[in-house]
Amino acid sequence: GGEEIATSAAIVQAYDSTAALLHELKLDQFIEKMEQECVDLFALRMMGEDDLKELGLGFGARFKLMKVLLLYLSFGLTKAMIMVISGD
Image (cartoon, rainbow, N blue to C red; front, side, top):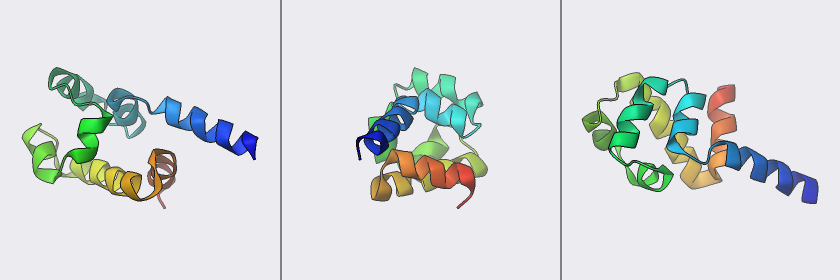
């Protein structure tokens, strides 16, 4: 019911920025670069692996982000983050 919607909204709000998303994935070292390049969540959703590579992300970082983005497009950000963080 309503409680589930409120919880989902709160979780999505926690990842309302690229910086918050990178922090949760333990990729803090890339926050400044993403901000310099004006990469928000909207832009991030449209990026491919080559784009992330061009921004200087190594294989592991690209792999994590690509997995989240793929799941994000399929299930929404909340479930994607839960799936990746929990290792599902």
